[in-house]
Image 1: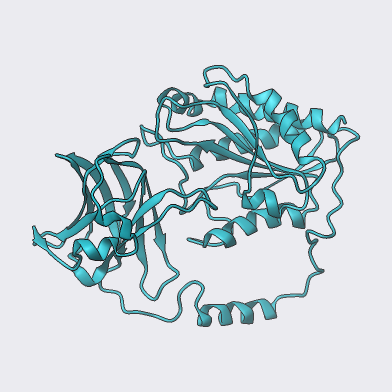
Image 2: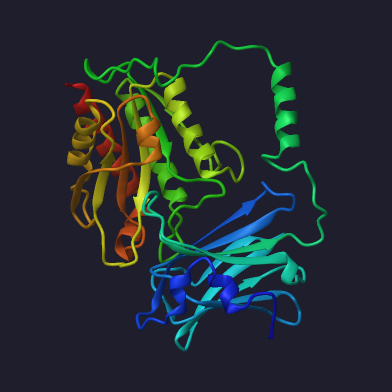
Length: 375
C-alpha cells in the first residue's frame, strides 16, 4: 500500500487531546453508513462509533479499489466485521484487528484517489447521545459536480415551482391546535405509530447483522393491526423501508417528518418503536422513554411499560425513563418511545427476529394503550 492524502495530524486535528497516547484501547462499537445525495457529487458516508478518541492513518492501494483506515490502539467491541453498502460508490466496509490496531477496509467498484476520500473525527455529543466517531466519506467516481442536488438552492426552487402548480389545500393542524383525548376508551382514538429508522438509516445492527429498521417495521405493522382490532384509527410514519422525509434526509428533517404525521392527523397519542443497543453484549432489557410536555406523557409510558417489561427472554424491566428526544419533544400529543430489548445482545437479537416475539410486543403495547385510555 502507499500512503496518501492524510497524515495523522490531519485526521485528529479537531481533537487535540489525542496527541497524548493513552493506555486504554479504543473500542469500535458500531458501523453505520448512508448514501448522501445532498452534495454536488453523491458520496457514501461511513460512521464508526468509538468509545474514545483515537489516532488514525489512511492509505489507498495501487489498484485504487481498497481504502484502508488504521485506527491506532483499538479493538472491535460490538461492531460488525463486514457491512455491504452502495455497489455504485463503495460496495462494502470490513473491520479486522491487526495487532493493537483495527483496520477498516472500504472496497470501491472503480479506482479512486485521495481527492475522492475524506476522513475526519467527531467528538462526543452528549446532547444528542452520540459517541465519539470517525467518519469516512467516499465520493462517487466519474461524476461531474451539479447544482441540482437534494437540498440545493436550485432543487428548492424547482420544488417551490412544483408546489405552486398544485391545488391549494387547507392548512394542516399545528402543535398548538391538536386537541388530543386521554380517556373514554380506545375505540375511535387516533394513534400514530412510528417504526424507528428506515431507508438510508438502518439504526442499530446486531451481532449477526440484523438491522433495527427491519425489526421495528413488522412490530409496528402488527401493532397497527392490534389497535385497529380494538377500534382505534391508526396512522404510520412509514409502511415500507423508506426515509420518511426524503432519501438521505438530514436528522431534523427526517424526525420532524415523523412528528408531522402525528400532528397533522390530530392524533391522540404517538408511539415510536425502537430497539436499543450497547457496547456490552450482555446488557439487555426493555424501557419506555417519555418527555413531560403534557400532563399525560408519564402516565402513557407507565401503562405501556407495565405490559411490555415482562416479555420472556429479555433482560428485565429497565423502567420508564425521561428522554429529551426530538419526536417526544415536538409531538403535540402524549408520546412515548419504546426500546424493545437490545439488538446488541445475541439472545435478544435472536428473539427479535421471530414473528412470535414481534407479535407479542405489538399485543403488549396495544394492551398498554388500551389501559391508558381507560383513565
